[in-house]
Length: 415
Image (tube, rainbow, N blue to C red):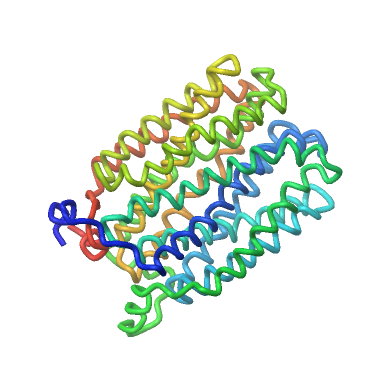
């Protein structure tokens, strides 16, 4: 369907199954936000209890983030095993490793278990985005992806609100992971109603031979995949680290207490959440590229501000902007990555562009930033990362087509 015609066509109502799938994927993504914020919220306690330096903190985060690269192999299996089977594997894997993290006896076991948990979590998140792209109508795809990603912010809010209380329990930082296990068990039960993606079933029925995960390198989509990998990587340098190290910055360089930081994070997360939920709708209304202009510029400005401001009010307000930018970056990239590749390559494209190549900066940058922070402080070093989204935006505007309201077959076509 032509995009201009689709834009004036009333949205098709979601079916009962689509509504159930919408809820399921949203709840699943909730834990991506919970886990991501959990690590940043307990870093000062881990640093103290395990005698880590600033460089050691950066190295620990980088090691755990390595799990996002390892997730590459799992995500690619979605184009071979199916979306449903992979979702089941990742939910069970994440549940087990999260519980085990709460029982980890030392630094090395903690680091290993969190690496595995991050691997399962990111693979589940990527599969959720593929599901969202394939199972919902084009006119609502941006909204659906945006809301699902918005539940990541909700997970962050819940975690930020719970951590100050949990840290004062007898289990300390361990309770953050032990408490998070209960909703995951419910999710494991709910997955039984999940169906395989209809587009995947159709593609498998027409598939003539098995394909290696390296198949995409032999197709005309190779260059588009590499381009998206560059965009993901540039964005991650800023958006991933901005929230991860803010507590270290706020307590170490601005003198905020643990309780003040928890309050600031909770206020900022709650304040940003309506905007994050609206980001997907924005993409459906104005388009992916105009939406990217707004979101990426806000992300850069927010990071510069939240690592340069002084005082609780100014820090909280600027953190709100930064959290919105970091969270809203994801719906833009999720939509583009899902829409710019055919069904047979969609999971592979996610695996290569996001989980492997794009996440190299996700893994390497915390180490470099930790080294820089040990000399110059977290503030000046993190402010430099704001150039990442600007460069990523330039690539989007100059090299990618607009995919607003297009059927997946049309949006994936190479010009």
